[in-house]
Image (tube, rainbow, N blue to C red; front, side, top):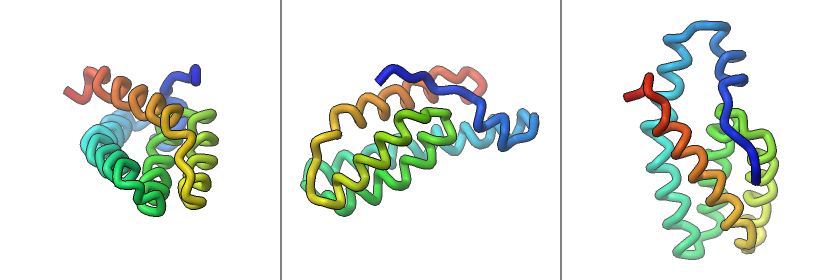
Length: 110
């Protein structure tokens, strides 16, 4: 899925307040790895209901980082997991990796 993170939504939320933007990104950077780890443990254990809950939580961060297509994928994947299926995981994993790379690349968060 070719899509890049962007600051559009963050800038819209912040109303131009750079300190708010930095703090929001810091929260995402702090929480994202743990949320991904929980998601992966749930899928590995085939606890798909719990995995769908994890995807639901991750959808908010996907949206904040401006991944519109990925948000739609997450909605479909969340529903799929609730039905006991796990076919979209490879695509969803790509999104998670892009998010992690983006957050790690932000120098203002170092």
